[in-house]
Image (cartoon, rainbow, N blue to C red; front, side, top):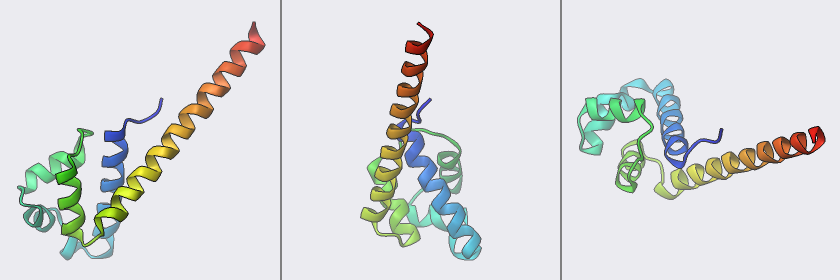
Length: 103
């Protein structure tokens, strides 16, 4: 089953943060990023743990907090969303072909 936009967006943000955290933990720990985003550490941790729809404000504040251009982050989310949709279409096509062969 294909992921929703919300799941894709949060996957991209989680992966981005995990990568940055491994590069320089002191700059990219949850406390610091949350403070720069204007939210509590627990709110940031909760957002990373859920697939709730991230608002454009959340995405923009995250990008700003980690020093990533907003348009680049949105582009990455868009590319991943297109990949998810493509995979879903391929899966549906394969399922349709299988059911036609069985008929």
